[in-house]
Length: 325
Figure (cartoon, rainbow, N blue to C red):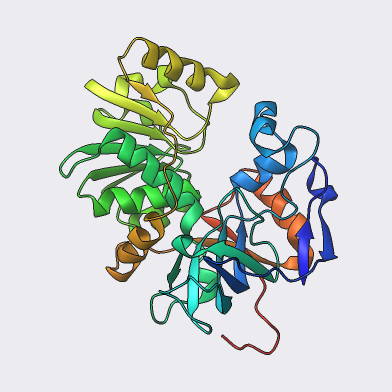
């Protein structure tokens, strides 16, 4: 099978398109012919091993995994003997655990618990939606967002941000989204109650306070946003923040048990795939696709994601040539 192969840390230039043996499913595993996958912030961070301490988890001298890629959508080609809920030919989507190879390849093997059948009529390239939503859901669980509460989302146009808008609305929150001019209509279409163009006005001076402020892109700070918080409000982030200051403040907040500043840790994949499928079927969640690249141009996809200017997700198209879906 063709795959984007990683043998050392570095820039996207270290990626090569190579031929590897087709994997075989374990007893509880599923072999999937991949039609679409993604390149996301997680992949770029793992490729460059930045920040350096992630090598404690990904490999000290070189990456433990040969193939990256969190999201997948495709068709089941084979299942292990213990798999009961899925069968050959099923159209499926889901997430790859970090303990095994990812989905930037023609085939991937994943555990049954990380896979779900796709909603009817959903195209493969619109089904690779989990990574951003996974981190967004971790934020909402950590802050225990409830119906009727208010949340401001800074950077609401990326994979995590667009997911946050939709999942917060699904939970019944009042959502204010902060984006650049070109993304105003997008976030309105996702359900944001109020949209602020940060290129036209200072979002920290809009005259409203919130139960929660979330930095979905790691480009703002608690000190800049604290005037937006209610007395018991919480600032959450999906990144360490400029100069790592959000991480340091989150650690201090945890030590002092104030918990006013948090960087949530994602939970388990098992269960989340089914949860998000339910939101899609209810019409409460959809993927926002920025660009699509063929596998042969995956290094260009990494370079684009590294600009940190993408909208929603960047898709890698692996649809077999004889498949017209």
